[in-house]
Length: 636
Image 1 (tube, rainbow, N blue to C red):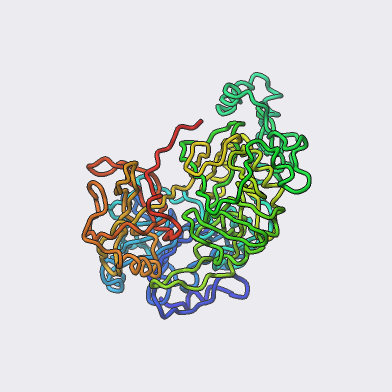
Image 2: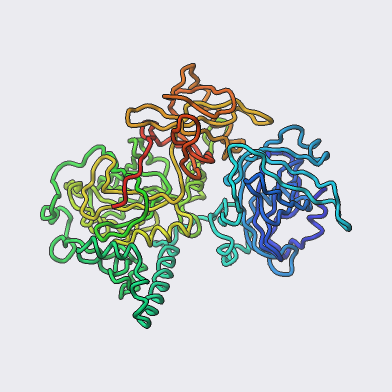
């Protein structure tokens, strides 16, 4: 096929779809687009010969070998269709909503052109959702009237098998994390999105307030129903509410937390949802909850504030993994930002941004240089996160990587300044001659809100008192990484502590690279990176290997960084299992961000392994020794 058929079916003045154009370079990419037109289906596309070879898969691809998915071959599409996500207007061919369901690279298991002509195309996918070996098999028996376009898409048996599997269970975009309904309801999706849009205009996360407001309205409706039907009251009480009433007797947070009362009713002041952290139930600083005049004139009266010089270096406080979300009025809860942790040191008008490993980040983010102008003090140390936001105010690690500069062939390209970053401040640990590490978190939050003013480059991270379950559910619905729970009366400790608890929604893990396997097929450089984590005795334990998630650029870049680290010594303690190909060892000096589905106990050793690990990028800001096997602590 050529692009003539694609061109014939479309009026490009009426549709946001890209015009036909052949691409000279073949990058062996693939894309799966979820398409709700007359009928819901999935479009499976492989980059070959300057176009996207395309098949319509009514039930969607599957990772279960028992599923033989019908795949109808359709017209070739231009390679520029690879990242098309949006709305095709009515009265156009294929009118409806299109989502980029999965993206990645593919490698043929033989001569691709010959296999395609033969009707037996075998290949391996390296995607965000689809991984492993597949076959597209042309159906030889034709029904009466058939055009001979029927194929079967079948998963081969390998380590990526998932049974059962339903593509509809993963209704989120690989580019923007939006659901199909969210794309359909976005007027901006009438235009082609070649990359996720970024935002820095809104001082608050509107999506978060709206999500929590919707939940409160639902709760209010249920509460009204129970008041009309007294016999149903006992059955309506949630387990978390029961737990809250049985375990806690402290006064409830005021409506500024955005939380429900102990009786399950919404707060009286629904306006608090717009600024949930503007009022917290903490001891006032001078009887009125604020400090008049300069900070140093009254900080001496704050319990725990200690006079002294500004520390030259602070080790950030770290959170401990816990098992499940919980509600507790002794705790506050925040969104877990997916960016780069950074301490902001302010001295007069000077700013120094320092990573958790004490690396200076200041030069990399010139748009944050006005941060001192938003602090009503001469000296301060603020704890926060540097993030890049998508169009809905959600932090995006992918955008953050693009912002800092993509690496091709081992070289650092210029940062993409079109992607702005923000600094989300969530703690204040030093202010005008006073160390605040031994001040209760509630009071540190009050001081942060009083002495740091939000602006174009800085935000105050919102927090919600007591309502961890609600925030966790809202965050999960919007594709966030997770949330953090913090004990309200806790001090700032320069170590990992159970006073801060993290609850993960997306399974992500920073792993040490201890080696790589040889490539196969048409793949270059290496097959998979071999991953490990340190145990409590500082031994590197093998937890899996990842070959998915790489494109040509990241594959080449990672290879250039691995080669100088080659060693004949296996850095892992214990057996390294199920590699399938010859391993090559490297010194454990590189850290990779890995996304995976769950922890399993695979192999003869019974050790924990990551299921379906996918490479997200290198974390050059991370110390390998910080990559440890975390054991979730019980929920409070």
